Image (cartoon, rainbow, N blue to C red; front, side, top):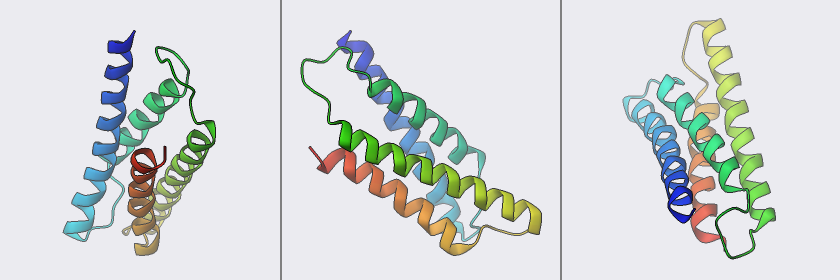
Length: 118
């Protein structure tokens, strides 16, 4: 059971890497677009995160306040990605810079909460 949980943690980290990596590629190229790599990263991180929020295969109590905060941030990232992609598609241009930078900052914040908050 522990090995399965570690595999789910790996998938969760991979989802974060895809989300942040896709964002970083767009940020460094100054295109400010929501790409499919970011979408897949968000989906992987969300599904694996929800699986990790279940108390299976562990001998300690989960911090549900931390998990709730991380879920709210994840939903905010998804909402910003959806709003930004929709507006960009309508206007035929890139995502508004403020919206785009908020996605990256919230993604890093979520990772920081996972590592720092015990």
